[in-house]
Length: 395
Ligand code: SAH
Image (cartoon, rainbow, N blue to C red; front, side):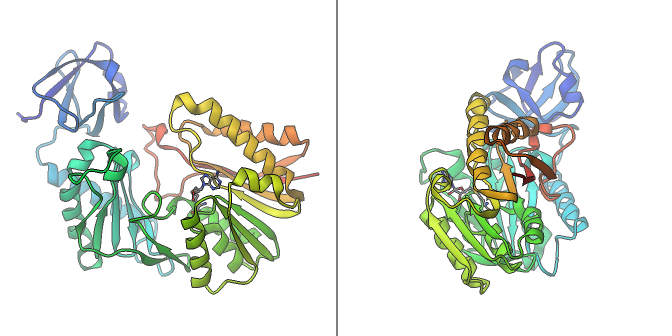
């Protein structure tokens, strides 16, 4: 018998677990047996005493984040097997030893069987972000296992969980290197060069989830006048310039982001035809010319939780309206949302309402989603957060 404390579910609450949904909400719990605190590993049982799953306990709305549906006897082995299969999937996707791309997401939380953990790979550096105390407590073990998987290819493991998990940074909980120490390196994404700074950058330092959409943009960029809003470190801008855009204007409210954009433009030898602005996108869009051939809207998540969903949908509508107004007839809109609670239907609705409001026709050319290295478990549809549309906007 294992030594993990037990959580017993209420009657009829076992079904979702049996369908492999990885979350147990606090309302489903009847009682616990044994000492349990935030981050504890617990075994979950039905009210009839049937073993269901093993996971990390949390005191919030999600009481358990499940990482195994079979009893766990050897935890390090379990994490190793999971990491190994995440790595093998990236091999299968052609991302490991890719000649032109050396950054990708290695672990996408529930999508890879690691609820509450993200690991991004940047050309030898693994940047981890735990979103639960339970996963945070496993960080050193996971860093050790990464060394086992990557061997000499691994230069460093940086844990960037503390600034996410603990509102006030404390000396006990600081972001830190768990292995090696290498800050800010250059990565290649489809042959495009980017400087990535995980210590001071947003999220893990770079938005890997837009890789395929940047490549798609390149197909439409030649000779176009392009506005890249919420540009961060200039991902879309670099691809557009390289593809021969006539002019690219990059906008972000963060001074640092604009500095990184400029650096990355330089790094790729693309200084001509580029301008970068530190500005609020909503204000910029109100004031700018209305002759763009292509506009990219990639805002941060407008809604972090369900209560903010309506406000977020309204904000997407307003933003898309402003952009549509600045496109010439026949121009293209690349529009995204990374708010998990704004499901694709709501996002499409917001964009549709924006087109209606502006009195413009619009055709959907592409429905966009997460790339394959950001997989979603079929049993956990909540793992889908990124969606996008490419529209051709008529007169
Ligand atoms: N498109 C980027 C990722 C965007 S992340 C890429 O491909 O890498 C969102 C960005 O929006 C951040 O850089 C943040 O600084 C910026 N941002 C947030 N609110 C903003 C606002 N109101 N106006 C301008 N930029 C904003």
